[in-house]
Amino acid sequence: MATNKIDRSLNLQSKMLQNFQQASRTDAQKSGDAARSAAAGSNAADAVRSGEKLEISDSARRLSEMRGLLDAGKAALAKEPDIREDRVAAAKQRISSGHYDEPGARSRFAENLAATLEKIGNFIG
Image (cartoon, rainbow, N blue to C red; front, side):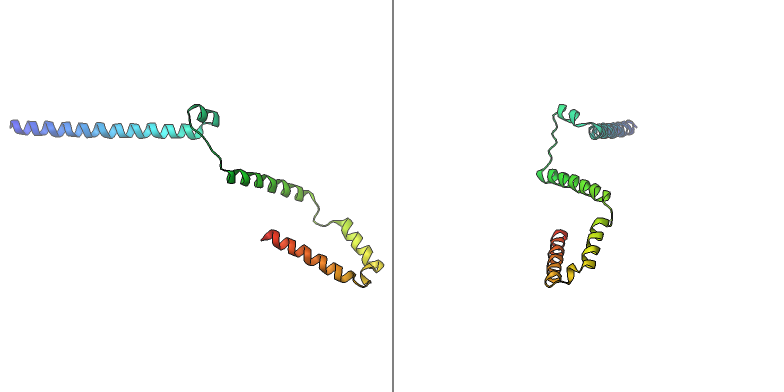
């Protein structure tokens, strides 16, 4: 009977130790989660004060600059009309005056168009 009491006592102590260890792990995980959340929510100044460093690669900087230029280009393009009435009027005037009927005008037009299309193709990739 004394052996049973000892066994039960050891089992109880073992269970208490396991519960304590589990509670310690849970507390450590909670602390770690809280620390990670705090670090994620902190600003760069807090990170510097804690001794952490943030490094941005040259590729990321260039990508950010390119994104800014692209956004600026899109904004400028959005301000432009879809059809440039002044250019259309000038082209109509040249057509009606016979400008494109002269020898070589059509070939110059075709060469300019081909060069422009090539540039667009190179840009698009």
